[in-house]
Structures are given as structure tokens and as C-alpha cells.
Length: 216
Image (cartoon, rainbow, N blue to C red; front, side, top):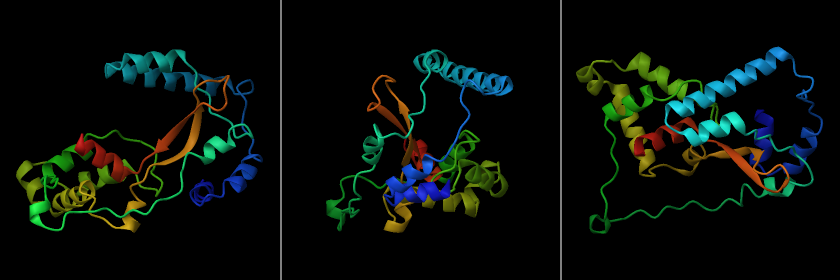
């Protein structure tokens, strides 16, 4: 998986495509009944979770509409290549003087960050750098006390608050930016009759997920 991601990120899509042709997978006709039952159970649980959140449109879609994974083929390889345009130089222009500042910088408190991390869902897919929400959740669980006053004084909670405040204000360098990007490497059919209509699936990093939850 790491090799394929590296090939994708470095633009070697033809090599990635050629290697993918050698991969074999189990067809639905030969899938064991136990596996099919497990897939159906996961689908029902996913739909129930959407319904519990009052997202009935998504619940109905998960139950009634099958969205197959788009296969790698000559018909859509060009579409997949266009998911990532050429990399542009990232040079944020930040105000130099106080008179140019029109908005206050975003500042998260230790309470906001720890509460956010504790409420995030568990067992999500790893980010492109191998990071995960579970890693941050375990860090908070082990190093940040539950009691409010002790939590405010916790060095770990303070460091996390400073870290995500810097992320929200784009106060980071080019190297750190690679840990915040969302990578698209799986595509689903939007219309099975038209192979050019694809819905890419993004895998954001844990840092990006946490920052987004804090901002929302």
C-alpha cells in the first residue's frame, strides 16, 4: 500500500496502473456467504448510524444504492490522472504589521482541543502519513487529566492547543503542509453506464480532521 501511494504521489500513474493489472480480487459470485453476511451487516450499521444523525438521505442511499468501485481501465485512467493537478508553489501572504490585520488570529483553548479529540470517532482509516485519530485519542487519554482544572494546567493539553492554533492560522512550513493534505486515491462510479463520471474518495490526515472539527 505504501509503495502504491508513493507511486501515486510521485505521478508514476502508468507504473501504478500496470501493477494494478496483476492484482486479483474475489468476485461477488465467489465471495463466501459468511463474508457477504458480514458486508451486509456493516452496510446496515452504516445506514443506521446515518439515520441516528438524522441524515436520512444518506441512510437511504447506503441501503438501496450500490456504488461500485471504479476499476482501473483505459477508459478512466485519464480521469484518475486529473484528480491531482500539478503542484503549485505554496507561499501564503501574511500581514506584516498590526495595521494590516483585519481579523484576530484563531486561538483554541486546551479545553476545546481535548474535548474535540475525545469526541472524535474511533477506528477511522489512517492518514497518508500513517497518522490516526486513535493516536491523538490515546495521547489525550493517557496524558491529559479528566478534571477541568488539572486539564487546563496539563502541558500536553497546552501543547495540543498551541499546535492546532498554528495549523488553523497556517503557521507552518512546506514540510508540515504534506501532513495536512487530503489524498485522493479511490474512485467510485457515480453512473455505472458512464465510466467517466467518477466520485473520488479522499483520505485526510488526522491533523486535518481534528483542525476541521475545531473550526466547525
